[in-house]
Length: 578
Image 1 (cartoon, rainbow, N blue to C red):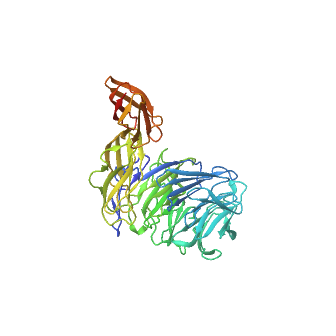
Image 2 (image 1 turned 180 degrees about the vertical axis):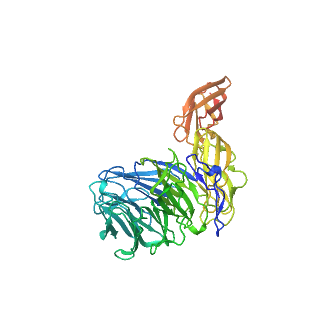
Image 3 (image 1 turned 90 degrees about the vertical axis):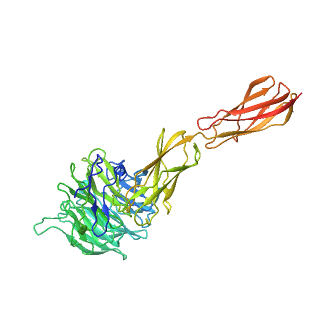
């Protein structure tokens, strides 16, 4: 069975449908038009990579950058789930490990002198907890209301994989040294399915030739260590070269990215090998990252690989499933060319995978947002789009109406369609529209340009539906109408003069400041222009004239229009006496 090769050239259709045995789910390549949407790429404004954490509640992705040496500052950059940068803040010292509070309201950032807290939406600092000094980058983890971090003191980076690293905790705001420690760097991992379990792995180094994995029960006041494991045989071969740890959604499995072995799948309880493991990574690929989707369906395995060798595999989390993995090969200056260690994470619902890649030099980084085409049912827009009102005018609301049909069972979450408006001035993304139970939707917009506007509506699919083919509608947007109203006396005299009041009103946007009106007078002597009159901010105006002839005199007041408004006029006839 062929696999999906995703490269910097965006090859879109190299996969045969792969049916997930026992579930009826189909893994298939998206339609060509949806290929770009299923892999959004953002160039990260960082020079190094420390950690990444995904906030599914607020749809944010945070990436930390140590950006310098131990005593210099770093930064944290935030993106939304569409790949747009939505925030950035700098830290006084290295920004290392990241973690979210249980309610996703707080982002914790490890720094040299402690653990700092930030509001996940405003990115403003909300507090800090002093800790033992760390020179090598803190690991952070959260189990319930307890926070865990590492501390390694070193005079420079050279000693980070040799000096002692301590495991510390923060419980109810109080910093505590747990007295658990080991040589070299330590990696921490937790998972929703193992709420009171903290997993720790030792990185391989000069003082740790046979690193360990272990777990802690964190339900009590202090952590209680459970089973542990080392991997080298009697001859010292097969030692763990740890790059990443991931806990399955149900908490029963532990996946380990081992640069010396590949992806190890373990039972989380005693850390023994699972009965069935994952197939080997492609030849030439070295394991660097691993992550389970929050819905328990998929596992993503990242690697460092050259050329067209896949750097990322996405497949069912159950290795017994046997479905051929989707393979992504990142190449070139637009994608990076390998997954960084610990550079994978999922949204909680499994609809998006976030992957950080880097180049061969390790000094440029990219964030990929992948939407695996794992939908089972088809979707389509039925019928043509329509719009109301029948004549759209600039500056006034217009509704683009349509209907989306979804095969299969009804979605449990509200379905939304996205839309863009394209005019001569460019393309603008509009607010998403929710699809009603009967499939109807209305995209609302306020056009700001006169002329043709093309509305393109998209449904990019979800975890149970494939993307629908886009549908478009081109409408003519006219200038907004104006009107002139006059209030004039029925009779006036040549000696006293004529006073006419009125108001200029307009639909759409406000009239430009300083608007003036032209005035013409028609009497038995002919027609002539009078001085123009200014329009006040509220649209009112006054016309004053000394008539030159008796009998009927007609005054015509007109507005010539502007870039966004049509012209209009009104007339009033006054009987003039001597």
